[in-house]
Length: 166
Image (spheres, rainbow, N blue to C red):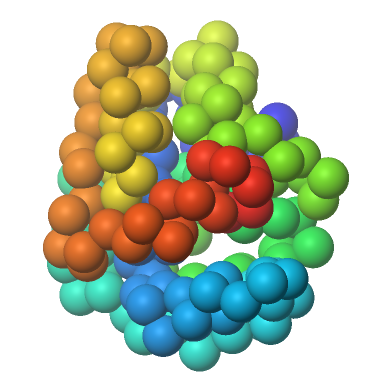
């Protein structure tokens, strides 16, 4: 875990990026082709529009609440993702990303991150747009919010579950 995690005494809100604060819909067409155009898909994330509902949620967190970003994006996209968060005025917080060669389903990768976080932090809420991640959160007994302000894409679901890519 990165050393910049918020104070363990503070409640922690863990927030996904794609489909929660970033609108990925403009780049989903890159996953319709075979082979999938993964490099272009992730590079296009630099141009994701901001989702106002997600922005409102993270900017309204109560004082004293810690924020942690948890995304299925691969580590090689860290700089692009950090720049996007800054450009859109997102609150700062550690950014946890999938290792580049990790192809597990998003729900499994995120479960492992969250189990590690729970060892030191009280998780107050996890926000994600993936229904299978939400199912995992229910199984883990974690408070959660389904970000349903962007229609969930079956193509993105396939990328997350079968190809372990986001």
